[in-house]
Image (cartoon, rainbow, N blue to C red; front, side, top):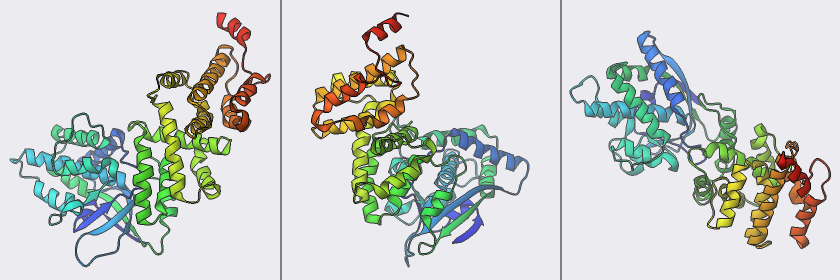
Length: 422
């Protein structure tokens, strides 16, 4: 391990490229983190401070080539590195738009800090993000138009910095000087000696902690050989991520992994231990390879996002998904994942699927109207798959609901009517 203190200019200068591996999360800093960084820059400059520590960048050096670009795979620090790149982009673009301001040199920023001047293709860029954000950052670097309506934190944060530069709280020259005062510890790991997985798990980036789904993605993909890693990411993991809405991807994916494990294990993992439970499940699951596991995750993520985002070409199913969301029936997802998979595998018909969902909706609604405590519902749905008899599928589910006379009771018509009237 080689650790050196420096600044972003020293880190980026030279024929280098920093790559974000596929197992890393997408760019996730919001305006809150950008405002904090900007506030630190302004305070440091106005108070005449010599520097300000903003954290570390941890990377693994790829095998050095006699000629060409030296590449580094970032395992921690992409958020601050990308954000500083956005600030440099905004500063460069200000200089291009204001050529009369000779205090700032746009070509210096462009050719030393954003691009490898004499390279072509992907190697032209100092920073190469994952597929979610790569094209947008390249478009910003190349000053290409970005399609109207594109939703991206990269664009939001770039616009924030561009606005601050125009406000002239600091002069462009002062901003450039202040960026150079931001102190970063650049840590380069030795692939043969350092345990990158263990280091990644122990890191807690300033700004936003790693989510459970961030840690799971890293765990699944990081240990694979490069070719297999790319295949699994492109064919399974990336398609799975695209099923989730961009704005809520992180939170909904966290919930998906918890509900997926609940379905598989028929017990509910603690909210802050989903990653640990997933690792244990992976070590003991029925799948012989990571590829098979990811294929299963993609299959169930499709069922899950259909329910969460109300997607279906079947009008009856879409109406039921609307009801599930309106009643906030998240507790039923683990059981309904199992039922959707049985429908997909031809074990039950589409009519059976609709009937089971209607039964679950009725169960939740009736109990709510009858003011029966809901704290047992999650356990009821977590274990309900155990009641299914494959040779009498529908009747076994109905029998479970009808036979309950305890806290899992399914209120009959008379009880429901009396409660509904009041």
